[in-house]
Length: 486
Image 1 (tube, rainbow, N blue to C red):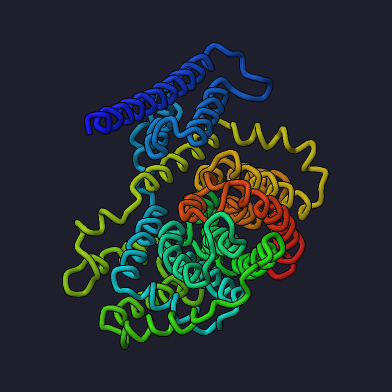
Image 2 (image 1 turned 90 degrees about the horizontal axis):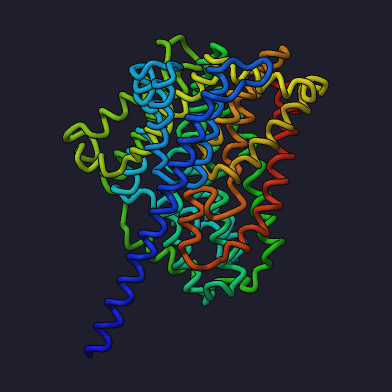
């Protein structure tokens, strides 16, 4: 008994030491990065870039490294950006902090609350089970059904929350099928498919993932162009519609399913649906809410409405969601659902974009790229930007960070050469969600990885193919197909 207690104490001590070692590494990284930013004041800027522009470039590089290493929380990294810009006189602190309350965060905020309403009502599970029940017992079709549900839900709520909803449903199907973690191709394909489809679905609407409203906000601030909800959807949905079945086929090819039919699986799903009974009042309310949200968001594409209608609707829905008797939750409950660090991240990202523009840094970077991209046809140049952004997510491991970095460059390049800034902004914004390679690239990947059904290398094998397909398909759509439509 005494030896067991000693062992436990030893394990706790070693765990504590490992934690301290990790914390020390993070502190060293943070200090080195801050020293690097400080030293930028003593470096002669390259030709064409002012001293303030060089400092802003170092701040952007520091933010990128902090996002990649997570030496400090990503929300705090946003505050570091705002603080450094204020200290160097690039952006007043008041202006930087004000961007945390930028209207774009109203869309991000309501996305979290809509997800909470869906989950608390039980409508998420009913919708998932209903679609799965229509797909039959063939595992390939069940997998397609689960991926379709995941993508659809991710269009309207957090990709992470959607993945968390689908993981237990998928795990139950795999248990019925007798699939073994790490050994079953069905398990690998299904859970990687959930991660892929969450990222793909998130591209479809401005509420799908923070990278989308960031792209919309940057387009407005840098080019003076305001996209409506429908404007984004009609440009993004073609990619979603094509990529979803492509990802399904890629996974079936990379991981041929060893289990073809889930015996009794369909019966179990139908039993769960039956046990849920008829639609409850709360489920009816949430369906009305979702329908109203979609209707209101699309309305400004058909009739003249106040400026920033997309954000006005988001604020209105937020109020409704927490209004007693009418809504679905108390404000205290709502606060636990909100990804506060993402709101800070969006604000910091917008502040960085404004700083890069104000100091001429974006124009300087665009100038460096002009010699190569400027000689290309517009469609090919857009495809190159798509490829650079799509590969960038693998380095940044943050959809918002990737969008913040690449979307401004895409917009300025388009403006410099007389190309369509909307097409370039949307292309870079969508490519920010090409998080297919590693579990660490995006939160949905990490949640699916936590199921224990696949290894990092398993996702890498399918993800490498998906990134190539995504870059090519998005390049063709945005560079050569959509220009004939818009």
